[in-house]
Image (cartoon, rainbow, N blue to C red; front, side, top):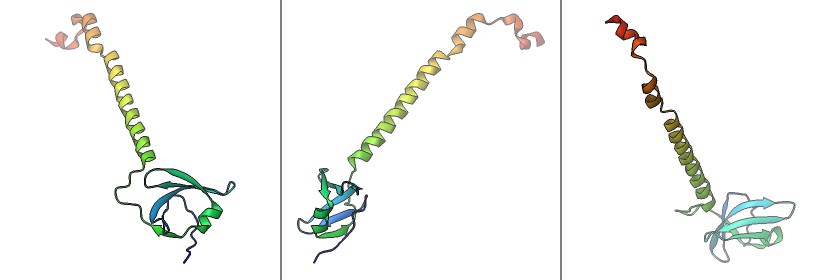
Length: 116
């Protein structure tokens, strides 16, 4: 029994012939290609004719699935945050005015001292 499902990016499907599940990454209607990703992270392009021949069922995202691409982006953001913090620390050192100002401090201009 054939089930016809249009490929939708982000949707998981089970190929009932192979009993394997995969995720649709993108659909290119101009090239008539569907880009899919299998559970082993292998990416494959399937033409729409082959897609229509597949015996498919909708599937849920597998438990514990880790999207490697999303993980990379998250890691890059964390790296950028760390770089920003490092830059901030360097700026803080440059702006450490206590040492420089202490040398130029004039006790005679201290208004609190004038009150004594």
